[in-house]
Amino acid sequence: MATPMALQIGFFYFFAGLAIVCAIMMVVARSVVHSAIYLIGALLATAGIYLQLRAEFLFIVQVILYVGGIMVLFVFVIMLVNLDVAARQRQFSKQLWLALLLAVVLGGQLLLMAHIDAPIFNSTGVPQSLPPNTAEVATSLFQTYMLPFEIASIMLLVAMVGAVLMAKRRDA
Amino acid sequence: MIPVTHYIFLSLALVTIGVIGVLTRRNVIVILMSIELILNAVNINLVAFSRMFGTVHGQVFAIFIITDAAAEAAVGLGIIIALFRNRETVLADEMDILKW
Image (cartoon, rainbow over all chains, first blue to last red; front, side, top):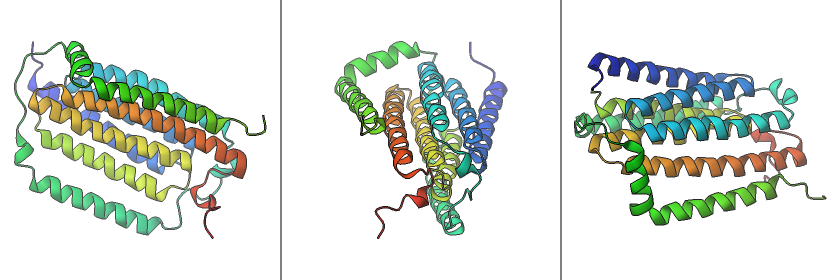
């Protein structure tokens, strides 16, 4: 059964607004722990948008891997590293206004590009019945994208070894 | 249905906020978190296009990007721990040992 139009639109704008507000709060928050919590909010809002786009498998991956894995890693490191000194110092770099100007110029360029190309992307997509999303993703992952999948697993192994090597004490 | 353009504009806003975070903050951990936000914004685009074309390829690529983000976070946080052990700081502009 298709969800009513108004409900879908409400879902999208609610999660989009939540994501943008959380992202802004993450950048301006003074404490790093607050930044991490706002980033978790933004990631969960993105997960809601995946659900609204009927990407159920990606929704679960986002919640488990991003919020449950990567963010826990971040919080661990925040606790490991002594941040009391850093929290009392200046939070923004000396080139704040130059950096803001550059970021706004970049945003304006992207906006212009998206605005020019908007007619191409204005379609709402093919109307389709709800597919068994997880099965489709698995089929694609293990048939069409088998080699990239294996390369990604090797990359994860290398990253794991690298992370252990980096964090290891040299004299031990 | 919501047109794909709206997803593109959302992704654009998140990328710009992430770039502002990378360029203006001094704390290395917040810079890494902003990079995660940028990668996440790219994923929104991929999934929206995947929905637009009615195929699943965009979602598979989004999974690869999440894998990449996990690897990058692990190595980056390892580097931060090593740096903090050697230099006793997490501020990006105090890590100037290569600057002469």
